[in-house]
Image (tube, rainbow, N blue to C red; front, side, top):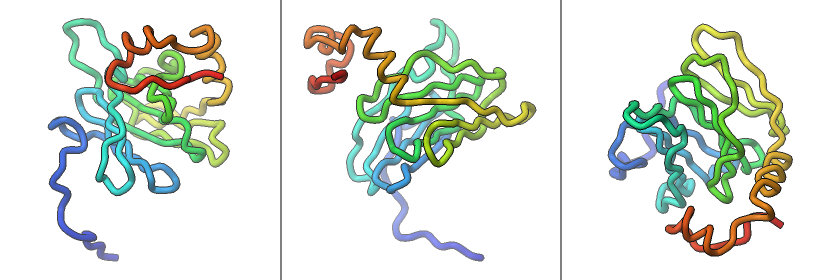
Length: 175
């Protein structure tokens, strides 16, 4: 089967000029995540007209180290969680709505992650690497959000929000 482009090439950098390492749409096609070799992930509307955010420091590394590149992305079927796999084996889950990490990195076998995929019910994440058997992780995004909110004692105050998310308008993050 031969495929053809749907129109003109996109003349927009999905991430700030760095090489794209992974792309993932959500199930509805209304969100595109694009990860680059510097470890950033940009979130776009499905038509690629408007960027809705940039996840920076997806894989925080020690000062002086080369940033870990994004090697794989997956949006959960419920659209709430983004899984980001790195070329050095780091796996991080992010809340799509708040664009905040869900806890710390998930322990993996440590080899560069080539593919990530959620189960249909969004409760299991599958991770593939070249020389490691397929790994399966139980994830419960609702429980993870509850844990993060509990650690944050109910969410960020306006002052904390200005400190940690100055480019984003304040909103309540925890009920």
